[in-house]
Image 1: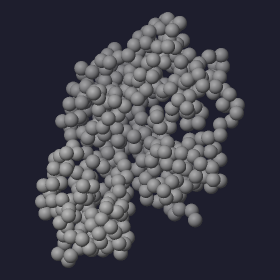
Image 2: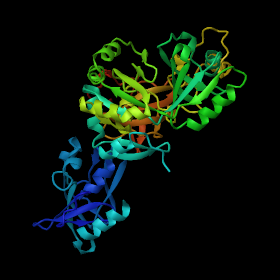
Image 3: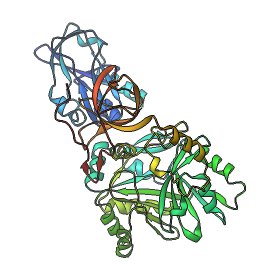
Image 4: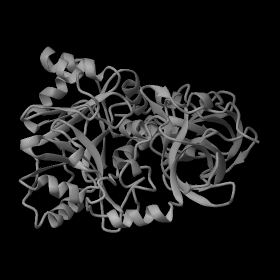
Length: 128
Length: 368
């Protein structure tokens, strides 16, 4: 069983979103997603300052198995990208909800439209 | 319903992530493909390859039949030796790539691919007519590949000292023939190692003994990245019915001598050889971060194009590598269409890695 923290929000495309105290949100991929993809070998991140729409392709994570597009969960502007992943993409496998975060966004949307952990767990169960 | 090897339950209890491979439910990895890859380069790993097709050829004309149906020549074998060969169509395309074991009085064993199972058996059954020889598939056996610099030593421990010493003494492509078990110094990883053909009823105990000896279970994911680093072809990627051995780096496996041996595909290959082959198989190393994958387009400086036949991330090189079929005059560099972006790649001669060492001189900076 994959790990689904209850304090996060989720998308149908297996990104997680965490509200930070400074108003930004942090985005990563779920434990389920990293397990499905396998060992990560390459990450392409969005540039800081880039304006994104919800659902827009904004990053790529590539594993030994396949390349996978990351979709922006909310409208917003990229505040920071996790540059350490470029040299150590395996961090996504090791710590998907922590050091393996992908980017931070200053959102112009609120998080209510996203799934909570219970809804995401149901989605995962349906996919399995 | 997917086919399963006798080790299926042990793969599941070993928490393997399974995938469908040519109709077989096989382990992709047991947690991390990269870890398994590293274990085979530095220590030892064991692969369940029981999905492969195992055929027995026996009878007075078994040898004559194999000399007719294979591009390599089994007359070069002594009992206890094996060789690699293509099975060719009449037009010189590759129907399968096989390893043939010469068991002397007991006949021959042919190990073929899983993906070509039906086609190869049908073809061989068709060609065997007129020969005093029998072809029989063995469904009661399993095959393990134990690979890595520590493989032979650890296997020796697991097998007991007598057999261990005999295995140690085997040269590449030699095998120990033990009635119901064949232990062969062959592999598909670019490392030293052993492949074992054994009764299906004995394989679970052997698997557990190998794991207890400290050998890492490995899935098909690591098998693919290891064989690609070793520059070895995969049927369906580098080779298929429309590919001649002369364009996919397998010319060495065609036995032209003796010239009076008639084998299927010979006249087609001889014509190709006279016409000079215009495409070649080469290795690629991507200079930037990114991935090489099968079917990506390769563009030579001249504008001529080729295609990536296999690509992966090479854990040993820390870069994406691939095999590609390209125009023979491609030169030292090319561009590859990686997700609609043209990335520079170095053209190299495979293998990329053998016996744990990188064989490719990597430039420190990409050319301008």
